[in-house]
Image (cartoon, rainbow, N blue to C red; front, side, top):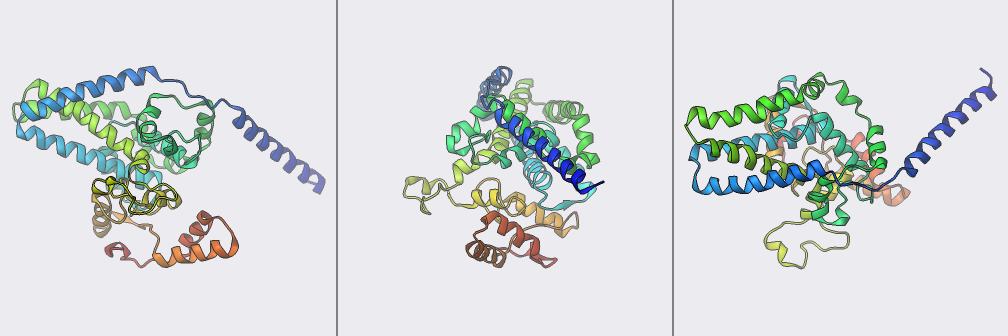
Length: 341
């Protein structure tokens, strides 16, 4: 092929890419209400309130312990599995651990790993822009609840379709769950949990249905939503001092760690709920690493951050670019996960 032919081919490709970008830009950014979801969430929350009343006045203590157990493993499956393993690849997991995390995440009832990760990556790609479906600039109520009751705009749908999901598509365990999600959901999320209080300690149908069913679902829904709205709760706003000058210091420990997660999402120490290098999820990952079930844990050491900041100041490159380079170049000791800080 001649040089002119090669250049012409490149020009055509660039033109097509520009047309695709232009088409994406022209798509509507308005979001319509998703009325079936609105009605579903209203019912879940109303029925959860009745479940909360039963929790305090009717249910047996074994059912209370069972509720705590089920919600804990469901949240663990979402934080250490869907979020840190599959969405951000902060570590690698053995087949046995991946199967366990898939089962735990299914018990959260928040959709398949594939669909959840795709939506979460969309959130990261559009973070802090008006197109972000969980835009924290619009406040906690919007990012946590209102956005869940709206469909994605045509523009957001186009961006979501363009997100690279090839890593998950190569994971046979993830794709198996995606294909048979509703079967697994029916068994792991509904049938087995609701049957246990009736079968093994003779609790009432009301307790099983409203506490283990609806109340558990209400808790896991909000715990999962908080992963994407936590920055509105625990994150400091630009220019805000730490600790902030408000009475919230007695309730919330605000910091810039939630912002750090969006700069370096591949750090396994970044907690979902405003913490760093602390919490149950991080501890479980360390235990799995010690057992050989989790390997190649990714994190950023302080010297690497210092190098990245110095390079950004010297070269005027974006901080995120410098941080990504520093992460790629740093060398971690094999037992770094055993050390705190």
